[in-house]
Length: 311
Image (cartoon, rainbow, N blue to C red; front, side, top):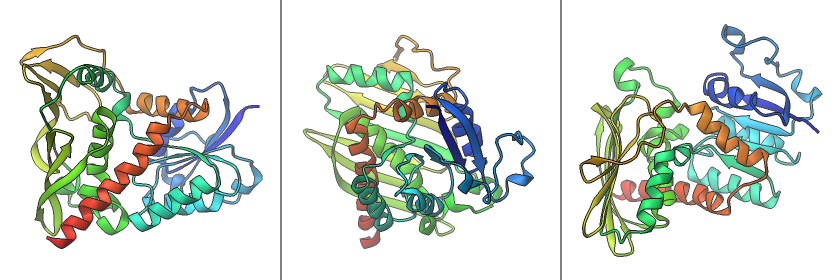
């Protein structure tokens, strides 16, 4: 039987979720809904559905690319209907609501996947294979870019903490998930931060992983574009670096100063990385480690928020 899907959210939802869904033979009809979808001229009318039509369909798969609070509401409205959920991060607007939703998903035995895309990039996978064979003695994670608000001064939920946005809940959560993928669980040791215009723009965090420290530095108001993960053993350092404005393309791996074999990520797109995550959900090949890491990434963000509140 073909899957009938609905995507909520007409920006990233259309550009990534819906475009990915159209590539699956198992997916028959795919629809997209948003309150402002009538204003979108780039979306074919055959995919658009209005809120009055939604009850007429039995959707097997629900994908959500909205603000966290709306995502939470969509999940709660459908959690008793045996659907599959493809979700974005963070899961809800605060950790209390996130925990409730995780518990409901488990209780109802809902199959779901949260769309963390970086670990699908070939050079992330390659780096993980490298460090599995090494005795790491120190590590660092640096992420610098200029968030749109500091260019256009237009606030949206992605920069507002109370709505599930901000440096910790919307950006640091990626760092935590990526580190969980690469090195596994860790402990948070120290946290320092800076603000501009009452918005947190910079974070420095020390993590402890067995016998080594991981230093995290994030700046979302930087003129430099840099996404770098570096891990060292007694002899060599291994770096994963992207200096481009594109978040997913152009990652390269270095051993010391030498570029290792290019793994073919120069033309990768977000919808392809989203497709790979959707495939795990549609094919019922969800990794239990991924589910654990979804929860841990949210948990670690909450721990950082608690530390910041005390500072």
